[in-house]
Length: 124
Image 1: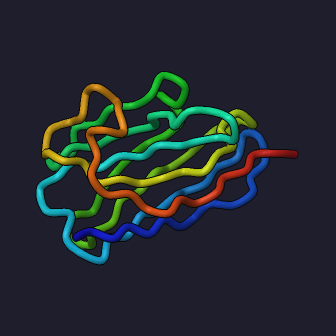
Image 2 (image 1 turned 90 degrees about the horizontal axis):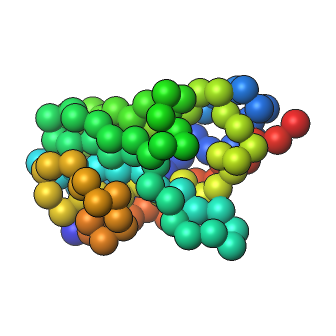
């Protein structure tokens, strides 16, 4: 059983940066990890994923601006968010995948455990 806790969210100016963290109470093991986000009235959107060995995948709307990384020794997942836009405003969730490979479908169904989310608001 894996419990995930996100942190690092908050208010940022357009063009600013934030770094989100996701800490696990138990080991990540060899599974892929990912970030999703959801704004009010919208479906959950894939943001980024990273495999056990560090291969990455990004959603089209964040590619080039966000960077996902992981520290397996510390059981921690990160999301560096740069050049933030108002459209990035959402509740961000980290999730543990079911396998070690990148979940290429970019679907929530490819993940087994989820955190409670951390709010990111981009506004002037």
